[in-house]
Amino acid sequence: MRHCAILSALAIAVAGCSGGGGDVDPRIADASRPLVFLTYVTAPPCSYVDANGEIAGTDIDFARRIAAKLGRKLSVEAVSFSDILPRLKAGEADFAIATIVITESRSRDVDFSIPYGSGGACFLYRKDGRKPRMSQLSNLRIGVESDSVHDFYICRHGCDPERYVGLEDAVAALEKNEIDAVFFDAVQLRTEAEKSGGRLLVTPLETKDRYGVAVDKRRPDVLEAANAVIAEGGAE
Image (cartoon, rainbow, N blue to C red):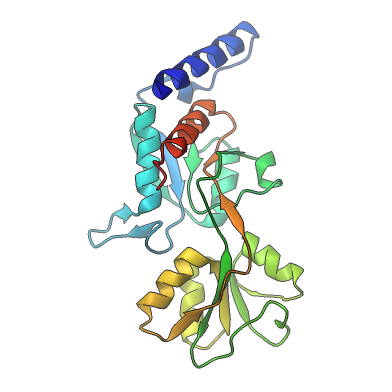
């Protein structure tokens, strides 16, 4: 029934656009076109490269369920996190899942689904190093992903962080003692701590965030499908 509701809502939207002289996005009209899905490959369990060299993870499974809801094929593209929202805004992709924190400013450029999960960010640090505290960052070298919400959050707390293209580079710098800690999403940092065999530790959560599927504003069909999958528990 939900699938029928999606198609009905889409038909109304298309009819409204054609009646008002607007242009319907050709990606909606052409059911043979695969959905272009963007993800940022970080670490298990969300998005990672498996032993066969394929992009896998819970985010990819989630995206496939959204595509299946619309009867579409899925084209997966791995990009840097900083490229995700600009590409969606430019119409170069349909949707993205990458533990993207829902914020008011981001909502001006893309549509967000209802939240599919919540979590937050914390610090990853070496067992033989100093345990970081948000109130005591002035003498610490903190690594973040460039232009991320974590970058902005650390800056608001009076720290000028070391910026990296991705989590992998930041963790490598931490292991080499080039920085004192990494500030990032807790889910991925906990995985890094588990992989380290006890060398790396995580702090309790410093932030509380809600994650959503980011969707091109010209794709109401994808947004509707994402919300339906989440409502059915398909994001888990």
